[in-house]
Structure formats: structure tokens, C-alpha cells
Amino acid sequence: MDAIVFGATGFIGRHLVAELLGRRLRVAAAVRRDTLTPWLAARGTDTTRLEIVTADITRPLAGLPPARDVYNTAGRYAFGLTEREARATNVTGALHVLEWTASLPSLRRLVHVSGYRVGGTDGAPPDPSVLGAYEASKVEGDRAVRARARELAVPLNIANPSSVIGPGQYVGLASLVKDLWNGRLPALPGGPDTFVPVVTVGHLARFLAEIPSGPAGEHYWVLDDATPPLPELVRVLAAHTGVRAPRRGVPVGLLRRLPRALTGVDPETLSFLSADRYPTASARAFAEAAGLDMPPAADALRAWADDLVAARFGAAASSWASPCGFHAVAGTRTWTAGDRDRPAHVLLHGLPVNGDVWAPLAARLDGPVLVPDLPGLGRSAAPADSTDRWLDDLMAPVRGRPVLVAHSAACGPAVRFAAERPERIGGLVLVSPSFLQAPGARLAGSALAAPLLRRVSAARLARALGVPEGPAVESAVADLRRPGVARRTVAALRADAAGRDRSRALLDRVAVPVRIVVGSDDPLAVPVGHPVTAIAGAGHYPQLTHPAELAHHLGATAAGAPAGG
Image (cartoon, rainbow, N blue to C red; front, side, top):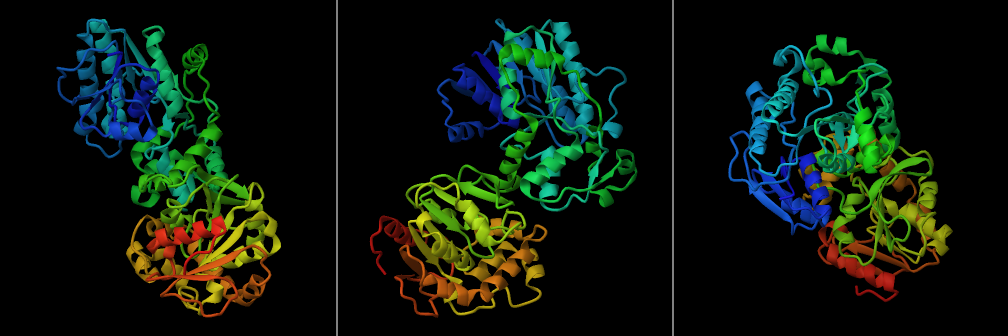
């Protein structure tokens, strides 16, 4: 083989395998069980030059295919490990890879992935009681690999990456971003100069792939020196996602003295909260010689934040519509998914859900869709302007005349837009329009609605809405638990109820084709002069319970043909 990668199912390892295969190299991936092949297939990676081999580096290695280059990306990255658990992979496993590598007849290079806080360290043996089992094992492993490689004359390079970010990375710095997103970061750990550098997994994979072509013996600190200090880094992420950044900081020394139950900070993470800088000159020179450009840290952090929110920090699959992320719409940080330029349908969700409610329907529609979370709801930030101004700005970059589809409480803003901007859309579809249905006290009638919504479970919400449990309901619950979302949801329900008469009056002024779709179990209470379709057996959320039938009627509307009732 051209290369063998240990730890090939890990975050770094799988991206490295993809990079090497992209260079048309023959690659052996050493794994305990194969979760790599499906991941590569989902990326569209050609795996014809890939060989999956079973290996457990915690035991001596044998029977593996020889390779010219050996990469050890395996590592146990977790806090709260026992000393034995941490050493099994990070020390013993690393030495087993080294011993096996020494037996290869045509070896060019062993590339060992260490860590930016432990690389090149010397001195007294690391103390797990001070550093924690994880970091102590990384320090010990780094020293042991370098010493044993000298004894066996193994050509070695060590890469010391910092916090690696990118799609699928949900540990490490991601936990801080998660707390920020969920409003559970009242203060920042560390001081104004705390430096937690990052590197994107794409850049790291390309860098690792180039190392064997360079000189042996080099140790590379692979990180972005331009990563902003931690307080600024958090402000960048907060501004991008539309949440508040904490204004106060807590010194690391104080955090060490306070009980974890009070701070919520794992003591093992505190050593990473440092103002230290790192010897990156050799890595920067090597990257420049190889023609590798590191993406700007702020841009990389924003893209990573989009991925984290889309995947609910690893709790859900990534977004069903791509691309997705945060954008400024009428001054509001707005979550959008899909095509912002040429959508065939623009889908506006009702309450108390978010744009994910459209996923089953969107999969059955022809052409691209644009699906935002309404301002102040779902993943979008509190509105900076009126919903009407927001919708006008959302539609501003759209070329062509898409069909505007709105559900329930979103039908009011959609009708107002259609009445004022008929030249911008090809048709209007109102799904379960709340302003034409019997007034209900679904969630808005009680002063306790917001607190109840914030604590509601997925099962209870699904029962209340008359829909099956699933990703859309779980996504809605995750957002309702964030600060302010439940309160703004209740306010939006009340505003919708107050605007019923206005919306009914404006409906007659809409000049584009209008179709109304309801469930047979959730009929209109007000007669209208537009075609009305009732989906048999459906309630208030036909996009979740009867997506195929709803897609049929939308398709007919887009084509300009009458849809069956």
C-alpha cells in the first residue's frame, strides 16, 4: 500500500483517508469495525483503492499489509478517563504502531499525530493527578514515541495540531460553543489573552498527506496563529449565530479552586486555557512550500458553527437541506436552508415548530427550496425589524417567481407579501391558514404557555400537535428550550390571533393564483373565494402526516394546473 492509516474511523483519520484516496493512492485503513466506508460513500469518495483491515493497537500488531507511509491518527480523546484507559491507546497503542512500523521493508515515513499542548515536552514524568489522565497520557506518549523511534531508527515526523474543527467535530471546543448556543455560558473561563488556537480538519488532512514528502525528524505545530483570543473567538461565534456573548470572565486560578458542581467546568480542560503561543514557523514554511493555504480562522469558525447547529451538536443528522447556515435578513441573524437564489418553493413554517417541519415535504418536491426559520423562532435570532420587512428582505435576492408556501401562523405575513409584491412570486399556497380557521387556544391562551413550552418533551409536543414523533418535533423542542424562543413563540401566536381580520381582508387583494390546503380534520371556519383542497385524514400539520398528498397539490399549483380536491 502507499499508506496505512491507524485510527481511520476517527475525526482526523477519516478525513486523512479521504484526502489520500483523492490523491489516487492505495490506502489501508486500520479499524476495529468499519464505520469508515459508509462515511466515505456519503461524501462520494472513490474507494476502489481502499482496503479495510482490522486492527486493535492496544495489542501487538501483525498480519497487516505493508505500506510505504504509516499514519497514526489513533488517540483516545476524552476527559474523565482512568489512567489505564488513557494509556492503552495514547501510550501503549502508539508504541505498538511504532514497533510494527519498524518491521516494514520499504518504509518512507511514520507520521504520528500528537497534540499542541504536549508536543516536544521533556522533564519530569507527567502527573495524571495534576494534568488529568488524558493530557498526561498524551505527554507520555509523545515522549515515548520519539525516544523509541530514535532507538529503532524509524524515520519519524510528529504533527501537533491544535483544536481541530470542521463538519462532524462535536468534542473539545464544541462543548463551549454548545453552551453559548443554549444560553448556558454566563461567563468565559480564562482571561483576555487566553489562546485556544484552531485548525480546520481539511487543512490538517492536506498537511498530513504532504509530510512524508518532506524531511524526516521535523515536528510541526499545525494551528492558526491568527485564531482570535478566546473572548473574541466567542464574540465572533455569538455575533454569527445571533446569541449573546458573555461579558464577564473567570480566571483559571479561581476556577481551579471552585467546585466543579458550581462552575460546570471539567478540571481537565483548564490546562488548555492558557496564553501560551507555539513554535509554528516550521509548519508555516512547510505549508507554504507545499502550496497549502489555511482558511481564515473567523470564516472557519462561522462555517463550523453552522454545521454544529445543523447537526444539533452531534445529536441529530446534519441538515436535510443544503447549504444551510446563518445569514443577515433585515438585520436579524436568520437560519436558512436550501437555495437562496433560485428556489422553486419558499416554505414558511408555522408554530411552535421550525423550518425542519418541511423536510418530509421538500424531499417530494421538484426543484430547490428555500426554508428559513422565522425571526425570533427556531434557530433565528430575535427580530430586529417587523416580520413583513424581514420577508421582503428574505425574498430580495430570489430570482424568478417561486411559489410561496406558508403554514398556519405564517400565512398572515405570506398574504401581506403576496398582496404587496405579486410580481415576486408565481403563486401562493396557504396550508392550514390559522386566520381562516376556528380560533384555538392551542398554546397562546395561557400565561403559563411559555414556561410549559420551554419544558415540553418531544412526546408531549407530538401528541399536542397530532403528529408522530420524529426529527421535526425533536428539532422544535431543542429550540424551544433555548432562552427566549418559547416566549417569542407565544407572542407570535398572540400576534397572529390579533391580525386575523386584516389577513382575511388582504386575501381578496392577492393577484397571484392562491390555493388553500387543509386537513379534513382541521377544516376552514370561514368561506373563501379561492380553491380549497382537503387532505383526507390530515390535521393541522399535513406536511408531517401526509407529505406525499401535499406535495401533489403543490406540484399542481406550481404547474398552474388545477389540483384535485
